Length: 238
Image (tube, rainbow, N blue to C red; front, side, top):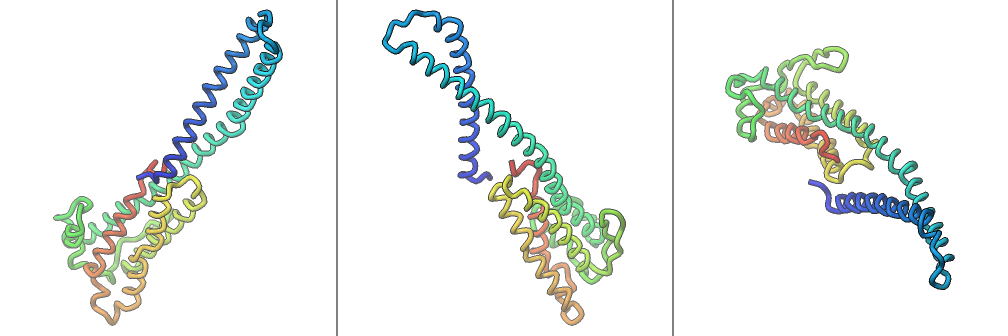
Protein backbone atom coordinates (compact mmCIF):
# COMPACT_ATOMS: atom_id res chain seq x y z
CA UNK A 1 0.00 0.00 0.00
CA UNK A 2 1.35 3.40 -0.99
CA UNK A 3 1.11 6.29 1.42
CA UNK A 4 -1.65 8.69 0.12
CA UNK A 5 0.39 11.85 0.66
CA UNK A 6 3.44 10.48 -1.13
CA UNK A 7 1.31 9.11 -3.95
CA UNK A 8 -0.31 12.53 -4.30
CA UNK A 9 3.13 14.16 -4.52
CA UNK A 10 4.13 11.69 -7.24
CA UNK A 11 1.02 12.49 -9.23
CA UNK A 12 1.63 16.24 -8.86
CA UNK A 13 5.20 15.81 -10.06
CA UNK A 14 4.16 13.77 -13.10
CA UNK A 15 1.46 16.33 -13.95
CA UNK A 16 4.00 19.16 -13.59
CA UNK A 17 6.54 17.44 -15.84
CA UNK A 18 3.95 16.62 -18.51
CA UNK A 19 2.54 20.13 -18.36
CA UNK A 20 6.03 21.59 -18.69
CA UNK A 21 6.75 19.47 -21.77
CA UNK A 22 3.45 20.37 -23.44
CA UNK A 23 3.89 24.06 -22.62
CA UNK A 24 7.44 24.15 -24.01
CA UNK A 25 6.36 22.39 -27.21
CA UNK A 26 3.46 24.79 -27.72
CA UNK A 27 5.67 27.81 -27.05
CA UNK A 28 8.31 26.45 -29.41
CA UNK A 29 5.65 26.16 -32.08
CA UNK A 30 4.54 29.73 -31.30
CA UNK A 31 8.09 31.13 -31.64
CA UNK A 32 8.45 29.43 -35.04
CA UNK A 33 5.12 30.80 -36.23
CA UNK A 34 6.04 34.23 -34.87
CA UNK A 35 9.38 34.35 -36.68
CA UNK A 36 8.06 32.90 -39.94
CA UNK A 37 4.65 34.52 -40.18
CA UNK A 38 3.52 36.89 -37.42
CA UNK A 39 6.59 39.12 -37.55
CA UNK A 40 5.71 40.02 -41.15
CA UNK A 41 2.16 41.11 -40.36
CA UNK A 42 1.57 44.86 -40.20
CA UNK A 43 0.66 46.05 -36.73
CA UNK A 44 -3.13 46.48 -36.53
CA UNK A 45 -3.49 47.20 -32.77
CA UNK A 46 -1.68 49.70 -30.63
CA UNK A 47 1.51 48.26 -29.11
CA UNK A 48 0.97 45.07 -31.11
CA UNK A 49 4.62 44.91 -32.12
CA UNK A 50 5.82 45.45 -28.55
CA UNK A 51 3.42 42.79 -27.20
CA UNK A 52 4.59 40.38 -29.88
CA UNK A 53 8.26 40.91 -28.99
CA UNK A 54 7.45 40.56 -25.28
CA UNK A 55 5.51 37.32 -25.77
CA UNK A 56 8.26 35.98 -28.04
CA UNK A 57 11.02 36.71 -25.50
CA UNK A 58 8.89 35.34 -22.66
CA UNK A 59 8.30 32.16 -24.63
CA UNK A 60 12.03 31.76 -25.19
CA UNK A 61 12.64 32.20 -21.46
CA UNK A 62 10.10 29.51 -20.57
CA UNK A 63 11.54 27.16 -23.20
CA UNK A 64 15.05 27.76 -21.80
CA UNK A 65 13.80 27.03 -18.28
CA UNK A 66 12.19 23.80 -19.48
CA UNK A 67 15.39 22.69 -21.19
CA UNK A 68 17.38 23.59 -18.06
CA UNK A 69 15.01 21.56 -15.86
CA UNK A 70 15.18 18.60 -18.21
CA UNK A 71 19.00 18.58 -18.40
CA UNK A 72 19.85 19.55 -14.82
CA UNK A 73 17.01 17.96 -12.81
CA UNK A 74 14.97 15.42 -14.75
CA UNK A 75 17.70 13.36 -16.47
CA UNK A 76 20.12 13.20 -13.46
CA UNK A 77 17.24 12.26 -11.15
CA UNK A 78 16.12 9.45 -13.47
CA UNK A 79 19.68 8.13 -13.72
CA UNK A 80 20.18 8.24 -9.97
CA UNK A 81 16.87 6.52 -9.29
CA UNK A 82 17.71 3.78 -11.80
CA UNK A 83 20.99 3.08 -9.97
CA UNK A 84 19.36 3.30 -6.55
CA UNK A 85 16.62 0.95 -7.68
CA UNK A 86 19.17 -1.78 -8.38
CA UNK A 87 20.72 -1.41 -4.92
CA UNK A 88 17.40 -1.33 -3.08
CA UNK A 89 15.95 -4.28 -4.97
CA UNK A 90 19.10 -6.31 -4.31
CA UNK A 91 18.74 -5.69 -0.56
CA UNK A 92 15.03 -6.46 -0.68
CA UNK A 93 15.76 -9.70 -2.48
CA UNK A 94 18.38 -10.71 0.09
CA UNK A 95 16.03 -10.03 3.00
CA UNK A 96 13.16 -11.89 1.35
CA UNK A 97 15.46 -14.82 0.55
CA UNK A 98 16.29 -15.16 4.25
CA UNK A 99 12.71 -16.27 4.79
CA UNK A 100 13.00 -19.15 2.33
CA UNK A 101 16.51 -20.17 3.44
CA UNK A 102 15.52 -20.22 7.12
CA UNK A 103 12.36 -22.18 6.42
CA UNK A 104 14.28 -24.75 4.37
CA UNK A 105 16.86 -25.19 7.11
CA UNK A 106 14.16 -25.72 9.72
CA UNK A 107 12.31 -28.08 7.42
CA UNK A 108 15.48 -30.07 6.76
CA UNK A 109 15.97 -30.74 10.48
CA UNK A 110 12.29 -31.16 11.37
CA UNK A 111 10.88 -34.62 12.23
CA UNK A 112 7.75 -33.48 10.35
CA UNK A 113 9.54 -32.47 7.13
CA UNK A 114 7.56 -34.99 5.08
CA UNK A 115 4.28 -33.33 6.11
CA UNK A 116 5.29 -29.69 5.47
CA UNK A 117 7.04 -29.31 2.11
CA UNK A 118 6.14 -25.67 1.37
CA UNK A 119 6.16 -22.54 3.49
CA UNK A 120 3.03 -22.81 5.69
CA UNK A 121 0.19 -20.43 4.96
CA UNK A 122 -0.71 -20.24 8.64
CA UNK A 123 1.02 -20.54 11.99
CA UNK A 124 -0.62 -23.91 12.71
CA UNK A 125 1.33 -25.50 9.85
CA UNK A 126 4.53 -23.92 11.14
CA UNK A 127 3.81 -25.21 14.67
CA UNK A 128 3.53 -28.70 13.23
CA UNK A 129 6.88 -28.27 11.49
CA UNK A 130 8.56 -27.15 14.73
CA UNK A 131 7.09 -29.95 16.81
CA UNK A 132 9.77 -31.86 18.77
CA UNK A 133 12.60 -29.65 17.49
CA UNK A 134 15.17 -28.41 20.01
CA UNK A 135 16.71 -24.96 19.92
CA UNK A 136 19.85 -26.22 21.62
CA UNK A 137 20.38 -28.90 18.96
CA UNK A 138 22.91 -28.47 16.19
CA UNK A 139 21.61 -26.62 13.13
CA UNK A 140 23.05 -26.74 9.59
CA UNK A 141 26.27 -24.88 8.97
CA UNK A 142 25.62 -21.24 8.14
CA UNK A 143 26.64 -19.76 4.80
CA UNK A 144 28.40 -16.50 5.70
CA UNK A 145 28.94 -15.22 2.18
CA UNK A 146 32.41 -16.64 1.59
CA UNK A 147 32.49 -19.80 3.70
CA UNK A 148 30.39 -22.11 5.82
CA UNK A 149 30.32 -21.37 9.55
CA UNK A 150 29.70 -24.33 11.91
CA UNK A 151 27.22 -23.47 14.65
CA UNK A 152 26.50 -25.20 17.95
CA UNK A 153 22.79 -24.43 18.27
CA UNK A 154 19.83 -22.65 16.71
CA UNK A 155 20.28 -19.61 18.95
CA UNK A 156 23.54 -18.88 17.16
CA UNK A 157 21.87 -19.61 13.84
CA UNK A 158 19.20 -16.96 14.35
CA UNK A 159 21.71 -14.45 15.66
CA UNK A 160 23.57 -14.80 12.38
CA UNK A 161 20.28 -14.11 10.63
CA UNK A 162 19.87 -10.92 12.62
CA UNK A 163 23.35 -9.77 11.61
CA UNK A 164 22.47 -10.09 7.94
CA UNK A 165 19.16 -8.34 8.54
CA UNK A 166 21.00 -5.43 10.16
CA UNK A 167 23.54 -5.28 7.35
CA UNK A 168 20.83 -5.08 4.69
CA UNK A 169 18.74 -2.62 6.69
CA UNK A 170 21.79 -0.43 7.25
CA UNK A 171 22.28 -0.17 3.49
CA UNK A 172 18.59 0.52 2.89
CA UNK A 173 18.52 3.37 5.42
CA UNK A 174 21.09 5.18 3.25
CA UNK A 175 18.38 5.50 0.59
CA UNK A 176 15.49 6.34 2.92
CA UNK A 177 14.52 9.36 0.77
CA UNK A 178 13.42 6.94 -1.96
CA UNK A 179 11.44 4.62 0.31
CA UNK A 180 7.75 4.69 1.10
CA UNK A 181 6.64 5.33 4.71
CA UNK A 182 5.23 1.78 4.81
CA UNK A 183 8.63 0.41 3.79
CA UNK A 184 10.36 2.41 6.51
CA UNK A 185 7.85 1.03 9.02
CA UNK A 186 8.50 -2.50 7.77
CA UNK A 187 12.24 -1.96 8.20
CA UNK A 188 11.66 -0.74 11.75
CA UNK A 189 9.45 -3.77 12.47
CA UNK A 190 12.21 -6.10 11.28
CA UNK A 191 15.02 -4.39 13.20
CA UNK A 192 13.02 -4.41 16.44
CA UNK A 193 11.18 -7.68 16.00
CA UNK A 194 10.39 -9.56 19.27
CA UNK A 195 12.22 -12.63 17.95
CA UNK A 196 15.51 -10.91 18.78
CA UNK A 197 14.85 -10.48 22.47
CA UNK A 198 13.19 -13.92 22.63
CA UNK A 199 16.26 -15.65 21.17
CA UNK A 200 18.57 -13.81 23.57
CA UNK A 201 16.37 -14.71 26.53
CA UNK A 202 16.05 -18.36 25.52
CA UNK A 203 19.77 -18.64 24.84
CA UNK A 204 20.66 -17.33 28.28
CA UNK A 205 18.27 -19.62 30.13
CA UNK A 206 18.01 -22.86 28.16
CA UNK A 207 20.30 -24.71 30.61
CA UNK A 208 17.87 -24.10 33.49
CA UNK A 209 14.51 -23.69 31.75
CA UNK A 210 13.08 -26.48 29.63
CA UNK A 211 10.78 -24.19 27.65
CA UNK A 212 13.83 -22.31 26.36
CA UNK A 213 14.94 -25.43 24.49
CA UNK A 214 11.72 -25.95 22.58
CA UNK A 215 11.05 -24.59 19.10
CA UNK A 216 7.37 -24.77 19.94
CA UNK A 217 7.79 -22.10 22.61
CA UNK A 218 8.62 -19.37 20.09
CA UNK A 219 7.04 -20.81 16.95
CA UNK A 220 4.43 -18.02 16.81
CA UNK A 221 6.95 -15.19 17.00
CA UNK A 222 9.35 -17.01 14.66
CA UNK A 223 6.60 -17.46 12.09
CA UNK A 224 5.76 -13.76 12.30
CA UNK A 225 9.46 -12.96 11.81
CA UNK A 226 9.58 -15.06 8.64
CA UNK A 227 6.40 -13.41 7.37
CA UNK A 228 8.01 -10.01 7.97
CA UNK A 229 11.04 -11.06 5.92
CA UNK A 230 8.79 -12.21 3.08
CA UNK A 231 7.16 -8.75 2.77
CA UNK A 232 10.32 -7.19 1.28
CA UNK A 233 9.37 -7.55 -2.39
CA UNK A 234 11.29 -6.08 -5.33
CA UNK A 235 9.86 -2.77 -6.58
CA UNK A 236 7.40 -2.64 -3.64
CA UNK A 237 9.00 0.71 -2.74
CA UNK A 238 8.42 2.34 -6.13
